[in-house]
Image 1 (tube, rainbow, N blue to C red):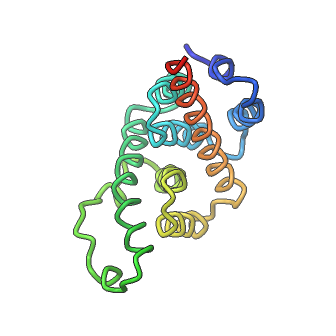
Image 2 (spheres, one colour):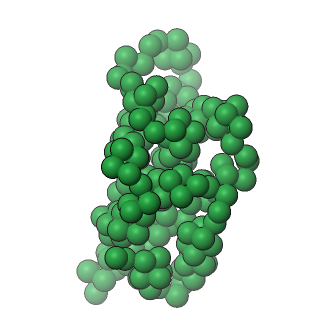
Length: 180
């Protein structure tokens, strides 16, 4: 089994802060094991870096049931679609698109087969990586209305930020290694 320590060893010295943040977030207790593992995996999937996905999956998948793992994948997948669509709606100046129905199937949002708050946390983290303000606002609002503490929401986003940075470092190092 791969560990956080093995992942940290792949990060060069210039990414020392990322290594330290990775350890701190892996040990954090503000999220349940399912919430934390799902957030790490959803963010790795959103990073689109195969090495990050593989390592994070090996580290955290054992904390999830098969149903929860499928829900994590569904969150990452549906947000990859929704983030593009709703970022467009939010950023274009024409108000026309705000009144038109999306006409995109997204039933998994209503029935994710896991706790709604967990699915919302994973969706929020992926939306942060993908930069969709409209989606972030929507998911954060659902979480706050559901009673999730701001610290838990913040840690979800901290995981997104760190996993995104890990993926960027690993991808950059792979490219630079091939250039040599």
